[in-house]
Image 1 (cartoon, helix red, strand yellow):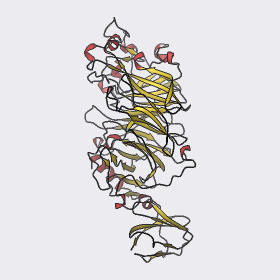
Image 2 (image 1 turned 60 degrees about the horizontal axis):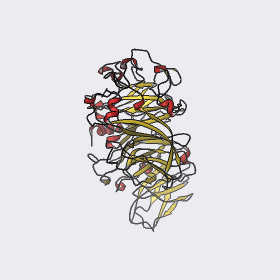
Image 3 (image 1 turned 135 degrees about the vertical axis):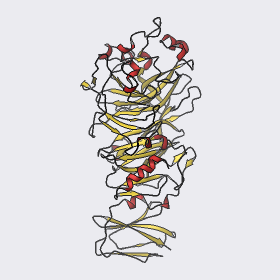
Image 4 (image 1 turned 30 degrees about the vertical axis):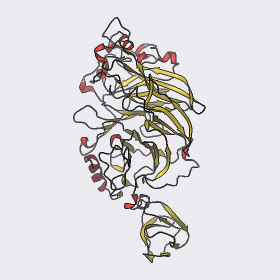
Length: 547
């Protein structure tokens, strides 16, 4: 177990209301009082899982493709997922190539391929309120095109350059789509290298444009930007994107036409397709030095939705890649504005803010929290934050005091599904993002949310989490007999018993009776079971043995 996970467990042990398991995968700890009650979605290999706080699977979808990488649960109960098709012409971390939609029951209802020798979907997609889908893709700029755009030829180490593109597509039929809007970064470049080429100008006077010769300290490979996220704000009609290699985020206008999105209308203060705002690394537009850099290979910047704490602010996972020492953070910050969606910029300075409104690092030692790639952070309705440490497949939820109230390790990876007791260290159980959905989310209306067993194999080593996490109390003169038993088990108490539930060692509910004081176990296999005995107020859990 890594230092960061050991540190988390030590924090958890300090709280008596937290369930501490001996698990190596699945749920590691669970504070029943403070964990936000919702269902968590993530994708791993060809499977997408929706789990409860006990790690039990509530729903599961199967694709023919590994992640490509984003996945979303839609309000109608459908799953929107990007898959990796294995394009051999365009190759880098995070590639995908197909967008799929499944219904709640796992049936594939629509798919659309974005993969060719010149174009490839990668990392992210986004479901629009109108039913369309934003798709993040790269397209190839040839050596000649890159040089004509102003690229220094010595910075073309791969002889080509990837243009980052955002398309809005309208699904058609079962496997088609119409492209209804498009934005390309190649239309918003600047350079001061060659006056005879396109985009020549003064870099520091044009922060709304991207310097084609700023490499972010890297080598100048074709994948020079590595945009890893696109998220949409319906109220502002704006898109925020994240460039890992530039260590910057950018906000652009989506209210434009495709033609307007390819142009600059009004410079810094105009609309068009130029950057409305950027933040994270002012060196990229020559308005800062290395000490001014805030972001290092970040992921998943997005606006906190209305109705949640800190609504309207931006939250992101700052990986800490390429700095020493390496450690990760979660940032919440407020871009300075003069009106909603109108970002303040003072000429010859860096975009603000100079500091965040909130920063999370490991409270004991920052280096114990580090994910080099992937990852996400999400504000929950009760103010907690769900964090996905992607390169370890490790999810944890923190409360407003930065206490860890829930921990989970993805038990699936390229080598298969782990058994409880297996050591996950070194297993490729990567997770791009983990997102928790409120139980009131419309996708769950009218659905059967009865949980199944956990993902990991041999999960019965530990008592069922959902049983252990119930609020316990002492029944007066409670008696359970006989125990061990062969047929009838009686439950006596001076308090009124409203329900008796029986769980097997995997945590699955196998029987329940109401308003009686006995239960027949004669048809059960021999072994250990758990009775959850409830009054009208609370419950208590007891172990029984069937002979």
